Image (tube, rainbow, N blue to C red; front, top):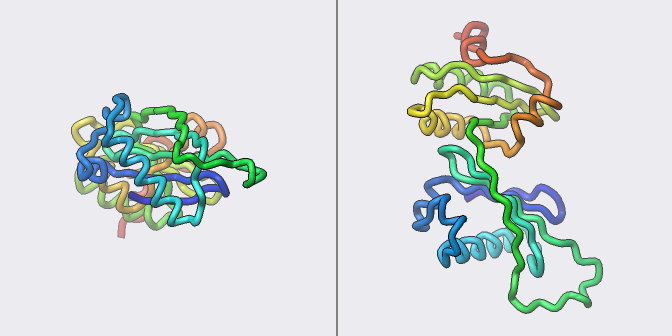
Length: 194
């Protein structure tokens, strides 16, 4: 489980498939009123509260992005309270949950060198293609044509070099700057094969 503070009242939690498996959960348990899921959620809130020194009380909104073969990302937004005296904590957390799925593999990279190393690794297992974008000083690799049989393996390798992105491919296409379209791995290997 990886935690990241996005804003003063927003926290991102990345759970891998292994994190879920270790706790005896699957992505499908979100749809059920599972006591295991509720316990995991409260454990995550407690850990986030300790990690970022934030008092998570009252109402929180939870957006859950199910990432194909990688796990899931939860974005937790805590309602901002202007006057602490008005807040009465009764141990109850109200949740609003929205779940979205992603069929494509979309990863974020800080360094271009990581994409070069990644391309070499992907080519070793015959995974090619992908579209590379630049947006807000980061690189994004969208792998939307990966064979279903290789998708989980591709996700593992992508995770070694970058981080799963919660951006929509549509947002990326609209606001990102295309660098290489549809043949990123092949193009990178052609120009950077040492």
